[in-house]
Image 1 (spheres, chains in turn cyan, green):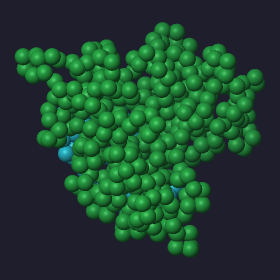
Image 2 (tube, chains in turn red, yellow):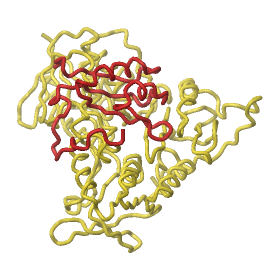
Image 3 (cartoon, rainbow over the protein chains, first blue to last red):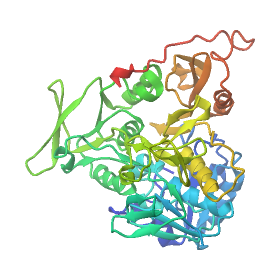
Image 4 (cartoon, helix red, strand yellow):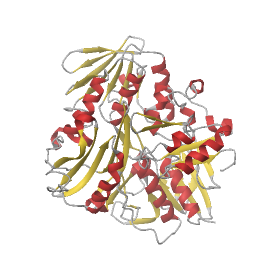
Length: 91
Length: 424
């Protein structure tokens, strides 16, 4: 995923992409990540390994990716993926 | 109703607030943040955000527990009145608290010359807005980027420039990059990686001054040896300063290295007494680490902000069963396609062994020892070895670890090559 959406690059101060899009928020605990790459198979448009162990991921997938992201989260052997569904309001 | 106030709306503050709720805190909850943004994730800011793979505004952190909180964003804390139990904001507003979590983090250390620091084209990299500004500058295709400082941020920025095929010079005053964290032995492995990728490394060199074009935009840097580097984009990567000034007059023990905490995580006053209404977590908290004989450390690690933030949240929620915080320090960095991950702290190491793999192949694990005990392990594209060695670090296992085992010959102990105190 070298460049999932270059159009999103905004001027400073940058808008909050995920909230505006009503999408998801994702973070991966990269201390925990062991590069098993199961997320890359489960959601290939949102997770990719660069080199042997550098996991690149999309931290703000759209709501349409919900099922893929959930599959990736569940597939992670070390449970390193954390997801918030911004569509469900939390404050 | 009890009021829990969290000062600092970043990773440690957010995870602390979530942990307090999860631990059953049902009172009022307020998060105060100096920046206008909801808590966001910093690691991508020096990597994918710079290369354009992730938008700066896409880094908002997931919120993992219902918070039911009030947010005071864009309002920095300016003071703490403990006798009245109130946080004073820059606006002069007072926010009364019953329990307080201090998670104000750190900021980038600026270029020391205040005039040159204001030149156009001179960047630091800490916040999301910093990253957006630097991304904009890199996307404009500067003729050469100058990175001042060969720590993790400096190395990651230089790697991102090469990913973008931009010419980049990295100036580091030490003998090699990452010398303070890894020592010169492994620092030179990282330096070689960057040199191969086309980074112009100037080691043992010092930028003496930045010069402008009379319109206030940087055009060149002058080195101590008299040479110059033509550049319109400078990234100052000289480490961080803790955000503690707002604690002036609070009676708490602090300096630019952090606010002092006791072993539980409560802050200490200048007489060394714990204030059990206030805890601290993340970059700003300096605490005695049980794995390192109670040495006082303030750690700028992502995982530490998560774990100590959650610890402090549970503590302030009154969860008595919270065990003492003893998380093994851990962090990662990826630069130029290589991922290095570390467990433990290398400070004071007197020996280094390559415990697995071989630096010549690019994939190996190194173990640091001090006075006969394992104190840290670092993996280069070999993370699956790391958990086993992290356990040895946590246990203070003997160093060197294996003497003539069947599957592995005697490990050679190397000098790690840390700079002497007076050179730091």
